[in-house]
Image (tube, rainbow over all chains, first blue to last red; front, top):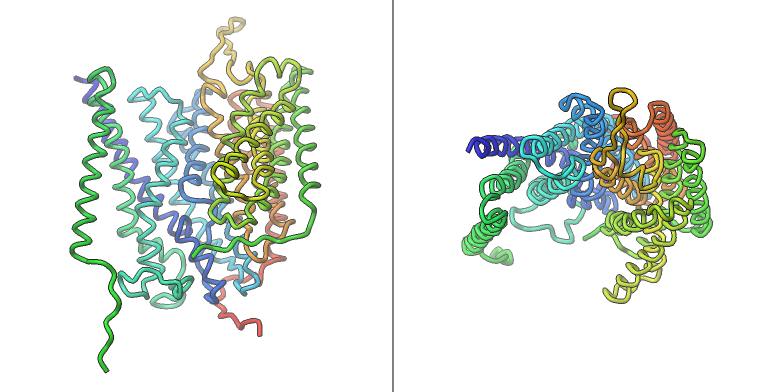
Length: 299
Length: 288
């Protein structure tokens, strides 16, 4: 009983860490314009819209976060087997991973922007200086919390995988959660807020992202400020729930039916979420209906 | 609407880069055998240099493959290279080959077989019908295997099965015990090498693609990514090799990274439309 209580406590703590990680990850990727909205940032100069938005085209978020978290987990693991204090090891390893992330971010911005010279898109050095550091800070939070969570799984819950392997699994999961949940807030709600709500992005509007702010010109930091309100927390809840439910079912039901209990519980959780998703989809279709053509205004 | 993938043509021909990358990385991998031969660990850093050579070659391969309009496929190309390369690497580091100093050659052979099969599946079974697919995937599986072996050599001082899976701990002076958990394979550090290599392989072309892509800038970025990946690998090596060898690997990585990064920024400055600091958006004047 005591071990189950401890397990539930660790599960809650891991879920909380994952929530912070998800929120930081989404905000980081939106400030840097990573993930699928990046294609519009890349496209804008080709359509004649010169902008001052960061262009962090490292790869999709899942592989990129797979890398940052795995670096941190691997280096922390190596430090720990030499006898270093785990907290110190994870902090130093996360700092090293963030250094790699920052270098990748600058080379991506410089490379993509320099290759757009034909369309008169200049390289803005102040964008690199001001935005890279902010994405690095958010990435540090995301990486540190994810690796700390993985460490909890190994040390407190006795997970059989070594830390680097958990790092690659949960790093990719973190990137996937942030990408799937957070990007609509950035892509459709922020870059295209001049379009009518629900209009989608027609071909004619491709690349026509919002480049000017309420005062002056829009910076990528404004995008982070905007998505930190809803997109970030939504991603955090998504990743936190993934981690929490995954551990919860294992801690509670692993002893049932020789391990099959946890698997059955997992399938049941997936079925419940499928029913919820289907209900929301049907509800949304009924209330908003299919896309309709704009009604002709009578002359 | 997706981003159009455009790449420059001309420059150094691909076959030349391939020869340069293959020979350079094989020579560097063989130089890591000095560790075994001389019973030292200082030659570990040659593994990192092998990875850099292979990544330069791989960047050019990805450029050729992705010029067939595989826009979002650029990062995936890095993943499949290392997925197939990991199998080739594990087969090639088997004790039979390593004891005969054959592991690097066998990595090329196994990589070619696995990559060739993957390319054939992609082209003939999945009907992608991309002319360079079979050749590119063959090259990339070899590159993946070489980079993984190179990083492993930096971490553990060699890529023999003993170096990968066993580590001796000194207990009370002369008494030593063997540990299999705290090793490169036991700690699953192949996952770290996998991600470091896969992202480093796809990043240079992914970052530089566009109408103004230049071969020298892209390849400089490839070298930069190689040295940058070597930095965490060298830091991890502190746990496995002597402090002198690990510091040497770290210095080689940092110096190489700094030089290539500075050169890359210079080349970006050369190719950029303008290099501005704290200036507003300049609306384009158009070409006419």
